Image 1 (cartoon, rainbow, N blue to C red):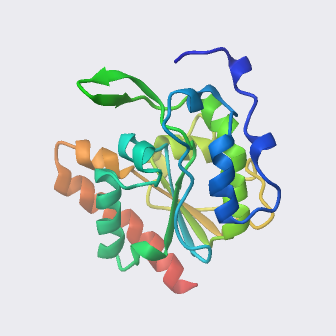
Image 2 (image 1 turned 45 degrees about the vertical axis):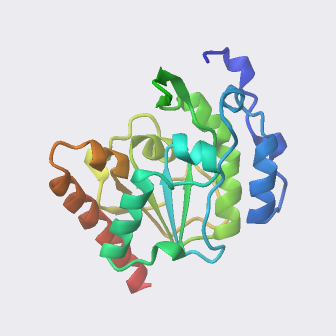
Length: 219
C-alpha cells in the first residue's frame, strides 16, 4: 500500500463548493486525493443531523465502517454511544466523522484486515472534506477522539494526555469561516476497549465527555 507522496494530490478538487451534507456524502466516493481509495471498499463521510451542536472527530473508518459505509458502527461506536448517553447527550443528535475518510489497512489476520493508522500526509490530503463538513454544520463544539484527530487540528507535537478533558479554542492553523466555540480532547473509544482496566478507562472517557456536556448546557 506504500506509495510516493506524488500520489496524494489532496481532496480539494473533488469537494463540491457550497454543497450540503448529502452532496458531500455522494461526492466523497469519487475522491482520489490519496492512494487509500485503492484498497478501501468505499469512502465513509460523517453522519448525523445538520443542526448538530456537537461533532465528535475520530481517526478513520474501521473495517465494519468500510464495509457498511457509515462511521462508528463497530464496537468503538457502540461504546461511544453508551458514553454519550451516560453523560446526558443524545447520540442521535451528535454528528460523528473522521479526519480520514478511507480505511487504511495492512495485511490480514484470517479474514480480518489489520488496521493501520493513517500518516500525516493522508490527514492533510483529506482535510478539505472535514473543512467542508464543518462549514455546513457550524457546531458549537468538537470533541477530538484520540491522537490522530488531535494532531490533525493541533499539529504533530500534540499529545492526548497533556490536554484531555479541557476546553480549548479552535486552532488558527485550521481556518474556517465559523469556528466552533471550543474543542475538547479525549481518548478514542477503541483505546478504552483495548485498555487493561476498561472500567477505569471508561470512567476517564465519561469525565472528559461531561465537560463537553456541561459546555453545551451552558450555551
